[in-house]
Image 1 (cartoon, rainbow, N blue to C red):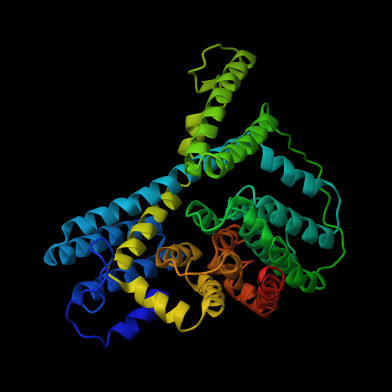
Image 2: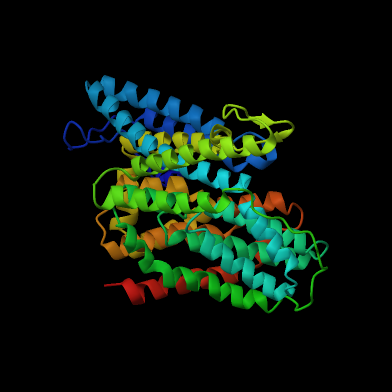
Length: 466
């Protein structure tokens, strides 16, 4: 959306190629060229297909991968014409390196999440919520609190799906409760993910870029808590205290589940130590952590094979029962999401190389000021996915204090809660509670969510504004 707004301004510019006065390795200004405008049109068309994913049933990774390739073709053409072919070559290598670090980090994290899911960790938690006999209002608060506390460790999407499954099971037939509780989960998961480097892709990108240290993210814990608590308090008044129908079925965790949880925590510590003390990319620490899991998976597979009647660790199944296999968990990673990140990073990187991000950075961070621009980033995150928005900010790299980098991290993470389509958590729950939790029902509570968004910004500036 920001890129589209910038384009409307640039449409009135001269069609000539205008070279910036930067050095030979810096991005040059091709915003007034026909190639630059074609690149903008390609990106907007691709992102329109991403927005219409649910209607078209077209995976979101496909249009952005095509758009990324076409945009970099245009980048290569204009730089070759300008006699600077090495600039485009070095720029795309830099973008690929950024993607590789993000990819390896997420692959390790997703593998752990899938392993815990296969060991029934999340199902056990969900069944505990269902069978404990809490009232609907108690479940509303407990699922919101758990979403806020789990999303900093897992991601907000996984957390929302877990809590959403519990809500749908408990509130079967009570559409009012399910819709309001789903909104609460989306707000809580996004807010919880905002104060942790592991809670959201945007916070991960900020941490890997070195804009904030690991423990600095926790400075926005209180603002993030306010972002969730204020709308949750208001919404809870519309939840009854009646008891849901009792459910007796209980699910339990499988062999090795607790040790996998401990290995995941150890992996997080390893990634933090790699970044803070060894000054190495956190992705390397995460891959080392996946090595921990691979050796434990070898032991676990041998153990289960012995229990089920065979002693061959290469067997995928024993009889009709599947045993734990690490590569099956890797295969279950969200490959559409991982490839979507590739397309987004290269699209935004290509547009930056054509000079658009420099223009937008001036419009936002110089003309509006850092605070106004960062608040706007959160609002834009509700319309456009927060990942390309945050990557654009990081690529623009405006001169900001730590307080402002914390603010943009908070707003990009929490701003997506303003609309149901503004975050992966909201989109996923619309699919899980189809026909019950909808765009319009979320929109009815948008003023209350916006109140929490504004309050969180005020609290952040009050606490961390220095």
